[in-house]
Length: 134
Image 1 (tube, rainbow, N blue to C red):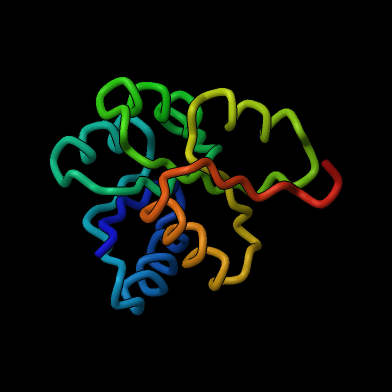
Image 2 (cartoon, rainbow, N blue to C red):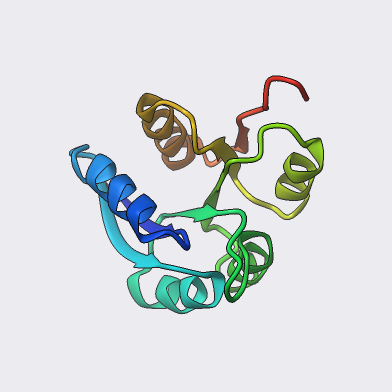
């Protein structure tokens, strides 16, 4: 069972992801947060295997900043960054540079989410979805 913490500033996105992930018998959403500071607190409370976190959150700490602190607290924690940015290689570079386990576009099909989460759980290697024009 993969224990997942969802972090996104949009409640409807968290709700949709929770419904999708909870429908998979190998995955369990163990908590939710709306910004990075809350995610840091929740990780210590619910001890997830994976944090599925939005890159851009305007209120509080964003995904890039939060993941640095999360990796300091729990170096083995897998962090899969969610993003809508498919046109800028700067984002991809910052995600990789910051020690994230991977990155996936919000527009990806649901099968892609399952694949990425399973890969993170089984081998812990970095798995990055490269945008089409990078």
